[in-house]
Length: 265
Image (cartoon, rainbow, N blue to C red; front, top):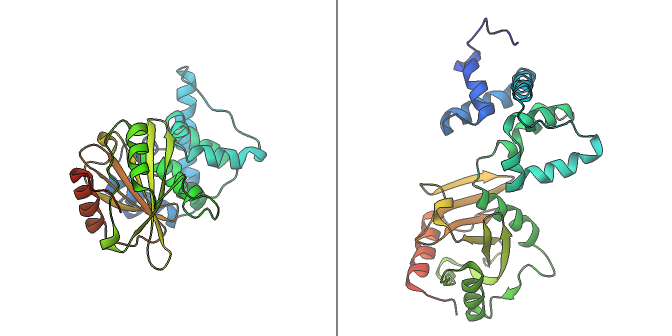
């Protein structure tokens, strides 16, 4: 067992905070404090990994699923897997921490990876799709923005909800087009917009508003800005490398058009 003789760590961090951090049980503000402390103290991941190993050993003793160490050639596959909702559901923070540390990643690398992110699954999947499609030079969309009626009908059929295509020209954004995404929760829609200087933003619509956070948030994940909120019928995520509009303005415009059924022209 790890020596618990000194329960207090520097900067007001407690031993209990590290255990709660691994279990995902900290309040957001406290979790941010612990993560910042860990990032500023490269040796701290050794302490964290010992706790993770202990918890994984206890889980194994209780006949809970364990996760074997992976050979180095599978590092990239593991990283890709950890960025997807299905893997994040299957891998606990504890198991993932042990695997990443065992593969030799440094403290900063481990703590910056999505296993410690708090994106809802629908938003993480939207972020992955943004990275794949938003700047694809050949086919970023399946239906071009010049066919908004077709987009509206197609998304409404696939998502099982009436979909209006928000007109964001008044915010300086032109509709490039749309595609349908397959997610763990079912089909989601992705609308791609572009501003006058070429900055692109995707707007994801998942047909279960309960998936979205209780309050609108704008966070940075994997080098991208992610705005998340809920409307009457959808969980929404706006994603861009440099958000071209203020989130409040975007939310108001999108929600107004979704509620009134406005379709881009």
